[in-house]
Length: 433
Image 1 (spheres, rainbow, N blue to C red):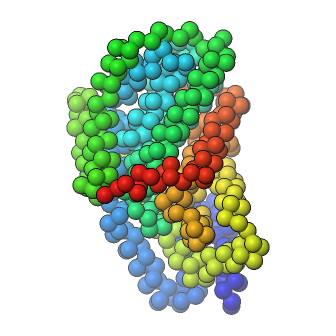
Image 2: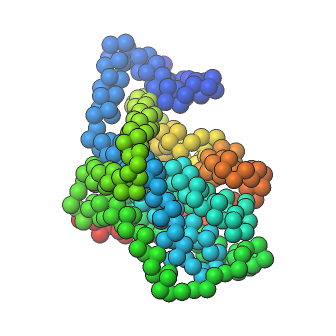
Image 3: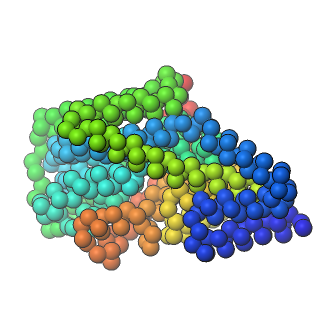
């Protein structure tokens, strides 16, 4: 059979497995294994599959992943959320939007020590939502703000999605981490500006503003020292070239253990056990997905799928901007039905080589992909962020959806700015040692 026919069978088999309800990791792996045996025979096909599994499972670049996951799990259990939230509350006192601004700031701070949007959202929601409701903030808008702030967990480093992206396409983990800093801070600032504008435009929906007190506001910085320590251990050491991503992850993991012990001495060993067990489960799930995706990617590469896509682009004379917009539409559609990791493992084997061939920077594209993953976290019907907040706040989904659309618009503006000014994420990368 010809390569196009084999390619059609491969994609068809994958879609059939997914339609049958097969877990994505198994669907990817089974489709790739079946076609590998058909193309190369039993002996050579299974040997190639074994080599791919071994290479992915022993990749040094992946050793930082369980360490960062463990750091996030321990920080989520440390009980530090109350301290950071109170400190952020002092920093934002007197600012239009009040505690909603505090929520965004707390989310950004936890993002620098968590690496997961789900963990960041759940951790901040536990302390922020009761405080917001108690002081009379709109329930639906408060829930949407917390969910939106939680998306910063996968953009501001350390980010699990950046590690997965790097493992799938071969980019540098440390460069991706540094590239996510400016876009993450830009997004947090845009969220805060929107909250301030809405608070000023609709003051009847918000409680009265507190008076600004410079000394009290400045005192909030004292609560930020745990986050500052982790930022130094993880990000600064990578930026100045002192540590590799794996070494920085080890520093962060050890730092999270000490911080958890400092805040939660009672029951510390139970928390340590729970954090290690959760790390094992999450790491195993992600590794299964990556190995399955790697097997299928090998087959798709052998069948020259990327070449066919590029030839189609050249044949129709599509400009890089049109291709970029088409990629954005693909991620919008995928985000309605799939989780972040599944979106990456299904799309990157095809889209990454296409985008880099058209001249887009691989690091820049990684940040764009993560931005769309954040949009997917909030986009119905599969909107994990809103599911979490709806469960915590007891606010129905149909009340949350109208308040989430302005935040989705902010994401679109941010992506447009990133396309127009790629230096937003690449400038710090260019300054790395």
